[in-house]
Image 1 (spheres, helix red, strand yellow):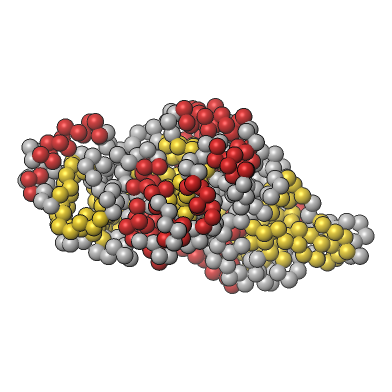
Image 2 (cartoon, rainbow, N blue to C red):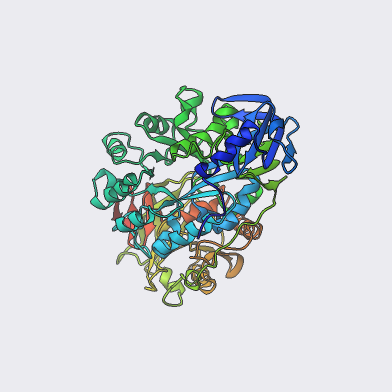
Length: 601
């Protein structure tokens, strides 16, 4: 499928020049606003913007020579005129929405460009899934660029995915019109070890002249980090402290500081600019993962902007980190990211620069949102039936599938426990002493049971372990087919019977997230597309997600955005301890480890 009509600069240039010179008239003129210039880092009152062919033709103190009988005029009335916001790294699937519905949710917040990595669907549907996401992205009235996923599986040998991505897939995708580069290279041990497959994917991307995304989820800034940087990734969003950001920009990478629904990594790193005085041009703010509730109720990149400013960042610098810096990173500085001649006319009108109230959003010269309401259509693909039938359990699960037998003769055991860390993606590797009752290890106190249910090949296999940090009380279970990155099914619970109910329920509805308490369903978010997304309206999905959050809280969970923490418990490329279909994974060593550490007599 092809992108809705937008002329290239070369096609539009004759008219842009003519409009700027006054020989032709503009399609749209925005009159007398404050030009927020991210090129020079200035606020310039009393300026006009003339737009033709969806691009900016003129920016100056008086565009009256560009106005004709058919020119639409918007009176800015002293409001700020900002470039549309860019999200430099994010996963549409994390919003529980298709690209069309994600766009519809974020456009009123001023986001006009997104650089998306659909590696979630790649793990479920392979290259076909990436192509479906890419094609729907190209239909939207804003700019959605796709990064070809690099790692499915993310850690070969430590997880089993529905499909695998190959260097040949990467080379093929680099020819697609909307592909901007390679998605985050999560297999950082592979890059450090010069794995031929990983280096072949990076080479295919660089040979195509496109950008390689990074993912270095390790605190080690020694030779391993330097080897990763030498392997070609051009950015990284896994930093959690100031030293991480500094190390990345010193090595020629862009430090991407993320504020997602549950990842709060801006405040701890932006001090590299605000206190250490590093050049902000190599810093980018992104979201990585935002669920629908955040998008509907709090915002998107405008939320991240306000947070960065609250952390002490100069508003103009913060804006650069989500406009011109992002565009330049992907080689699109002449296309977007600033209000300047030739660029796509992606513009926000706001009466409050500090709080960034988004009043009017213009994309490609068209008004797409007014006062929080979208004014254009976001077209959907016709998703094939097999993309809506991806949860294959192989059998009806029972409570016995979630039993954890103890070593023979044990009265108690010391076990390894996944420790959830609020507002961060990493987990902790903990230990707990648990009782053995009738030969089975029983969770107690703050420790819950966690299971990973295989759902791609109908094997009926269940991997069981323990997790701490959710704070659940009473009899409950929560299951999700969003389980980064292999996207099997994660079930967390205090009741094996409820865990079976939750898992079977998701098998019935074709995927999503469900919460049971005392044997009764409390909340359900259906995600029928690949078990990851809904093509329902963002507001509807957000309302269901809010009910899910309320059910979690009623069961004792007080974590911020605990659903996001739940969904990452199988992410075997971020330390320290995770679960996969292969067992319990020690991500500090990239190897499986035993659940039982010690038998207690």
